[in-house]
Length: 121
Image (cartoon, rainbow, N blue to C red):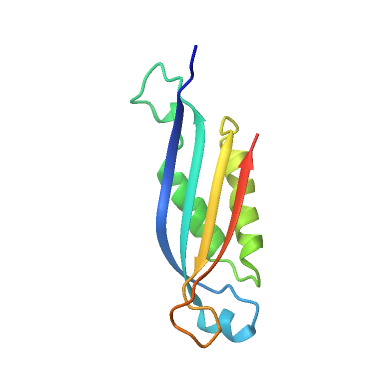
């Protein structure tokens, strides 16, 4: 017998955040795009009830809180977001997070950097 996995995602959520290794980056803020994908069993007796899914509005609020905090590394933002999702939605069995910095301080406007975390129970 098979199983169904549900995915809820936020993609290309844009932020101007005080995140960067250099103080100037934190002062001027950087532009980021964030993707969050969460996976969990689809076993919904009522597919119209938010209790049976991940509320993407709550996911967005968590993402916004994480990305507004000043920090040096994207890794810490990704880890905080991952921990927050796992705490709030204990039924989630897989999470993929990617944070892209659109203008890293390389002096080249066609480069993006990214940090990703993948959790699987």
